[in-house]
Amino acid sequence: MSFNKVILLGNLTRDPEQKELASGMKVASFGLAVNDKWTDKNGEKREEVCFLDVDVWGRQGEVIMQYFTKGKPILAEGKLKFRSWEDDQGNKRSKHSLMMDRFSFVGGRDPAQEIDTDDDIPF
Image (cartoon, rainbow, N blue to C red):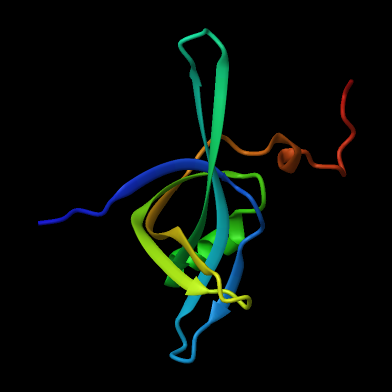
């Protein structure tokens, strides 16, 4: 028996891009950076960043395209997928990516978007 499920909290590293497959299904893709911070045994603060490519299908992908941009935080849930290929020089390459099943918005609204520039600000 196996189980492939991850939940990640991170920030988009680039604006989402959307493609339409020959079948008509749409897929949105973006990069995700997930930070891990800790203090080592010598008391020094350390940080490591994990970068993943994320694919999200259908309606959820459309929502990602509408509401997310580079730098925005997201809680992403899905399964890891291992991809391997050979580059143009014949070197074997590989990476893990996330096939996103669900997501949640993180944080509040951007205050700058709530300001009505037509009104006089009373200060």
